[in-house]
Image (cartoon, rainbow, N blue to C red; front, side, top):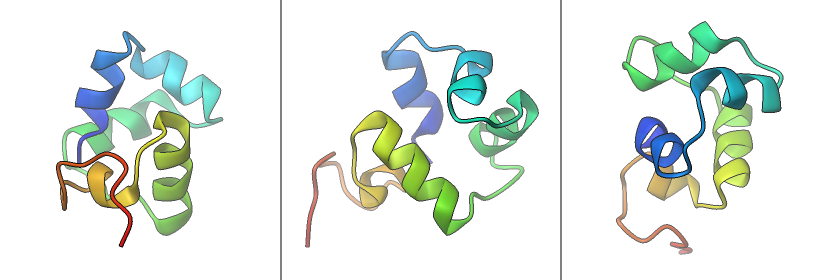
Length: 68
């Protein structure tokens, strides 16, 4: 998942992202390290937050606005 890349590009800490999304910082860390997978609702939340497609977030495309 491109979560860490997107977060760092925008100079957002894990804690700020977690607070903005009403999540736990540990959960963000686990997503970034591949220790945990996000559910559908969380993927939508993350994609909307960063303004990218879910396919981009999941590295299925290099186009952040990819729409099929």
